[in-house]
Amino acid sequence: MILKKIWQDKTLIKEIWALSWPMALIMLFEFFIGLSDVYVAGKFGKEIQAAYGLAFQLYFVFIIIGMALSVGIVSVASRLYTSKNSVLFNTAVSSSLVVVTASGIIFGILGVLFSKNLIQILNIPPPIKIHAIPFLTIYSLGFVFDYILMSFNGVLRACAMIKKSLWVMSVVCAMNVGLNFFLAFGTPLGYQGIAVATVISLFAGCVLSIPYIRVLITKFKFSLEPIKEVLNISWPSGLLQVFWQLASVVLFLILSLLPYRNIEILAALTNGLKIESVIFLPAFAFNMVNAVVVGNWLGKRDKENAFRGGLGTAVMGVLVVTVLTVMVIFNARRVAGFLSSNPVVIDECVRYVYISLISEPIMAWGVILGGGLNGAGDTKSVMLASAFSVWFIRIPLSYVLAITFGFGAVAVWWSMNISNVIQAIIISKRYFGKRWMKA
Image (cartoon, rainbow, N blue to C red):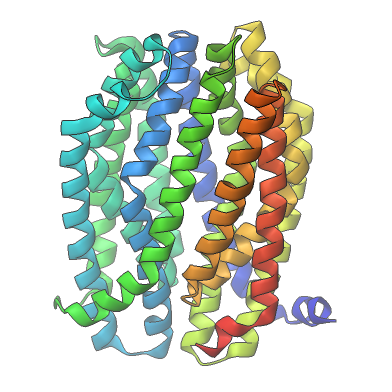
């Protein structure tokens, strides 16, 4: 009955779609960047692909604060923008950007100074360590640009300027992909050109976004009050990202303990995650759209449409993810063969993709509803649901089944599916309970 009313509300559906399709394209650009990264790394060998995969996981550990702050900024900015409180909006956004920039600089310095030490202490094959160090060190130089660009894009989404964000990210994608091939194959940088290309394109994205942000921030003013609200919303999201990214690193370490073909399996996981991202990234796009949809309606003090809008966005996102899942099923081996010429890596990658596809629509449902909760500022419930499913289900189950009982990598893939289902159930219960509407 609720869904029927949602689909009959043409205005609501148009609003959701107007935000969704540009965001989906932005995530498609992210997919192409990641795909080109893995492809170029694969041309240098399986060790480079595995090293890139590890460095990329650690990269996200360093930008966790930026991702968390962008969640808080979107939640606050989307509500203030529709409430028409321009003074508070200006103060909140400008103050947040100061904190974001400072955080990016700090973590960039930490990354440059300690990337080598961090990778050296990990229990992974030495060939992977050697190549992962320069990857992460170079990536660290771009942390501040990534922090700023994430926040810029979040503000543009919150203020119904998502097409501006789409234009910026299209340029970032074209630059990154083009520079990947040029720097890696046409300069002495070699495989390190993958990381250099990322830093340059992120910097360009920041520069291109500045004129659009200046239109929104008519008067710069710094205040700690809006920062407190942003941080109050952000810290659970940041902690969630810590749990999530550390879990990814732990899974990487668990797979490195396998007694046979561990490097091939790690390379296969790197490739499989990139293939799977053609599904996950659109789901994450709808997650971010849902934060804006729910936040905008709450800013208008319309709780009923906030609930319906969040639900409609989730249904629309699941439909898109389901279609993409079918497409990936029929093309998994072809894409895996494109990313690697190693037959073992290809077979393991295809096996990972086929197993992980089983829970993709369910995963999307939970992720997108979680975006609605984020938009309402209820980030704590999302953090708790995700942390429980990953650290009490995924990690222990992966280790016990893969290492203790010797079922290998397949057991890890199935453990990931089980944790996705549990996370979706917990978040659904929270969303339909409507307690987040009372805040």
